[in-house]
Image 1 (cartoon, one colour):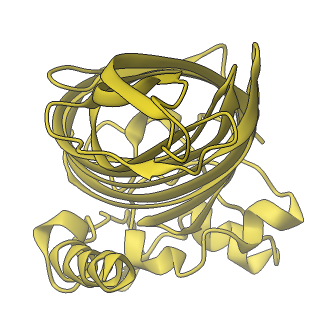
Image 2: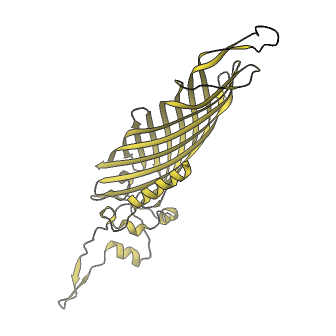
Image 3: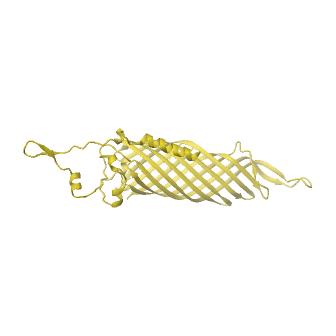
Length: 336
């Protein structure tokens, strides 16, 4: 079901942002100088681009525009490039007309932090040699504080489509608050009787660390200094328990985000809305307890962000989330 929903969102975003006969993607007409041939007729004066083509040179220009933007305008560059990889990508350059295109390849170092409450889907707790017992989870919840450092690499495959791959390292602190958990086992009251299990409130403080990976697709369109983007992302992590516990945490995240932004002389600012579906299964043991807990949270989060280019090819991105999910992201990137 989650995979079908993910695919449906992809189709909707492609339909919304697809560049067919739309002012977002309209080519800007280019005025050409003319010269007289002395007999009253005029012919076009060769432009600089015509001269480049006559010489057999295929140049891709990356320049700061004075008008409209097709992709993220802050990453357009002044200097041309003739490297083989930059000549190939992005594909289908003609759709951009005279709009500037970003350098297609990028790498970045990212730090990210988020915190929020999660709902318990199921919880089973055991003590000592006793089997795990399914608990009544009403009133129980989990609180997760997550931090990560990661490296991402991106490519503008098409003028309106960027694909990004990310690998990194997660540090996750989880507090699972259980309203009705076994907290003590008392000796049997008599021969042949089972041990008595005492129930009460219990908090499992669990810490996890480990690597993760993520894949992201971004669709972008723009008109003049305005632009909009749709982001689809999937992340997967398998983390190991630390600090006294033994076990693992399998964590998956699906993220969908829509942004609307404006470029102020090379500085992009935007507002957006993010939908996130996160699921975590935590299994292992802590002291005399052994546990199997499934938690999940879906959330809508407003976003604010800023992006700018520094010293030519270096770029800085900052984004924050507010509400039930609080987050902060900082990225230092470089365009190849």
